[in-house]
Length: 209
Image (tube, helix red, strand yellow):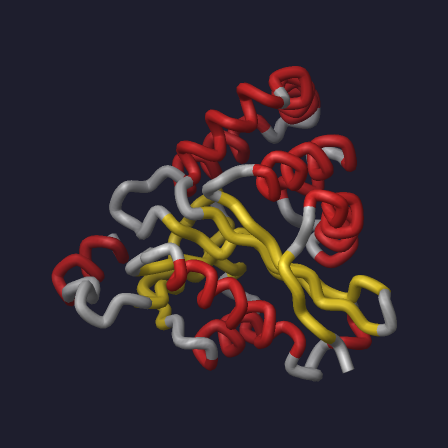
């Protein structure tokens, strides 16, 4: 049976490795191992970021991460890891991914969506369907609740029905499908955590574009 605990700074290497292995198609993974490691080093140290790790027999088998405010995290990353940030920008330019970086940044900073986001979640293949992913999502949402966050977003590929079902079981509801990158559609989900501050229908319609 796997157990879930809060991630420590010392877990950043394991989380970065899990991220690259379980989300190899993601933009962050494509910026290289050093960039992924630097991202989690900043995230886990930041007051606006956090993570959780699932372990079985002392071995990491899953992770999930969240951020309260992307703009603040971007600033901290540039401040603390400017060399890595510049290298990542250079790599994205060389590999024709700079437009994807800008598109992702614009989405992350979208003021029409909740500022808080479940950034990433991944579990090893043998742990899928065991409830570990759901436990990780639950821990992330509880952390946001404890910080007084009223609503959280998460995004997944429009074709990833398994992830969508997980988020809906965890209390998210799909608001819209967005073309974050040309020709690539993503499903945007939002979970309302503060019952006294629900997003109104009109605002949800505006979020959905």
